[in-house]
Amino acid sequence: MTRVRVTAPRQSAPLAPGRLPSHREIPEDSDSGRLFVRSLIRSQLRLALVVACGFLVILSVFALILVYGPGVAEIRIVGLPLNWLALGVGVYPVIGLSAWLYNRAAARNEARYRDLVEDK
Image (cartoon, rainbow, N blue to C red; front, side, top):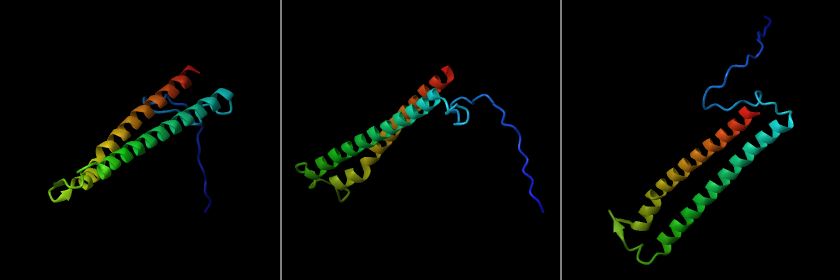
């Protein structure tokens, strides 16, 4: 039994809205293509680092206030200390806000990248 591979030439279809062009659709061998891709990667990395560092700072300050705050350990709700309850439940809104901000900013970065590529 022999295998036969059937291929067809790649046809360039228009981009669907909200979809970034693939690496094959941007001429990366050109200086401008490499610059655009490098710029997108750098901006997304910078955004990820800023959001992660901000999240860690907010979480650390939140934990320090709850642990070392005067009288926080003595307050009990449903039999649990307030600091445990706040660290166990109060972290989720911070996570959600960080994720929402990251998603919004990443979409903005990709839209700018798409505008640069389309103007090219």
